[in-house]
Image 1 (cartoon, helix red, strand yellow):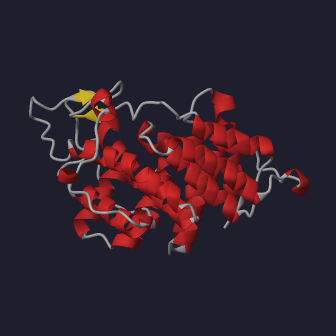
Image 2 (cartoon, one colour):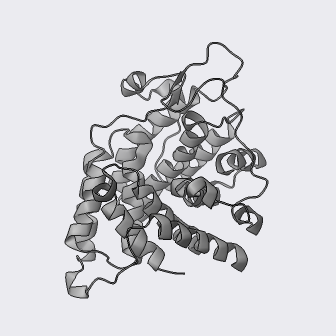
Image 3 (cartoon, helix red, strand yellow):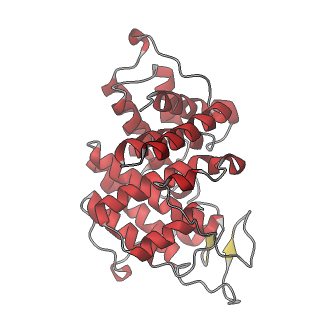
Length: 316
């Protein structure tokens, strides 16, 4: 495994706001880190693993902040202090639904990478990542939704009648996520649908990573807003695009929606990587993040064939 994916992925996340003025260039850094761990934690063939790594490196050459540089040990922030600062930023923001959970996604994958490297980054770089996470405070739940609105989601609460199981550990959360994914009758090509479903995978995975890294309090604090997003997604679970009652709130999607494309190959197969992923800009890093998260949940939940089938419509 090439640990430079972690180093430059973190550097890209740290510098993203300063370079671009927004919260989203960090996707590329998170995607590179996801590629590293996805290959390391799954049994891919050598050719498939090599293709994933090559694509992640190509993405960083185009969107990374700089060639990975080795920080002088004396300048590197101690691991414990770095984790404390990032965990503190998550403590401030993880209790609410902000931009479909990206503060949790960025925070968890940063902590996982820094732990893997046994410490990374200067105090300034760690502070930049913490401030990126804190920038989500008081932001909207997300911009694109079907059959609901941002205002309704802000006032939404999870109730007993919603039928959510008790979530006490990552296995229970993964099994809920897989069940929810399998329940969609049709997955539409839209930020308000296939993209949100994909972020259900990554958001839930982020919470599981926090639990596994030794932050159970952050895991439990993040469950209610996560369930709020799942509840909102349920409103689009049985959408028939021919029905006039379907509503859409989005600056990028328009009705009528079309069904998402189905991927003939799965990401652990070499065939998947023979498709040109660069022409779609690696889907801002999600070409690595969605598989990383789904395969994590699959290990916890042993999904039925219909769940694998729906996953194909998330990754095409």
